[in-house]
Amino acid sequence: MSNTTETKTPPHFTLQEVVERSGLSEHTLRYYERIGLLARVQRDSSSGHRRYSAEDVQNIETLACLRTTGMSIEDMRMYFALLQEGKAAAAQQLALFEGQKKALEQELAQKQKHLRYLEQKVAFWKAVQNGDDAKAREIGTITTGLAKRIITEK
Image (tube, rainbow, N blue to C red; front, top):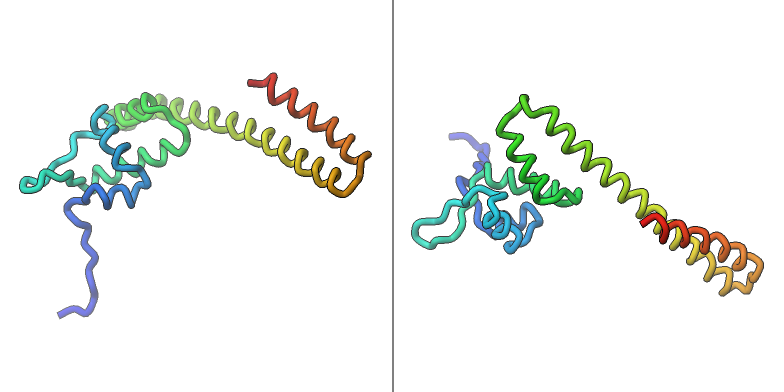
């Protein structure tokens, strides 16, 4: 008899286990199933509760990651459709992910501008608090310029 403990992957996962593993809510998982983003999930024959396979969980974890990048439902749907084509769809997959990467980079650049604006506002109010009127005016001019760029670049 062996002293090693084997860890077996369960044949199915409950809705709560999938929620915990993926970070997606029950509502989101049900919604993704309803709109066909997820294949129809098997049900327990006695209770009727959803029972997710290991493949379902892998797909859900992928969806959770894609969602965090801001990818649209249609693009996620496209990803899974192209996945079925394998290597033949590599160019399309590449274009899909390059497009999402570019969108995320643009969003990040915008957020960096917002952060710079807030950093200047903090510096402005520190100068005001310290009674440094000259520094506050200097920072105020910078902040005004940043604000105009943020507003006009929408």
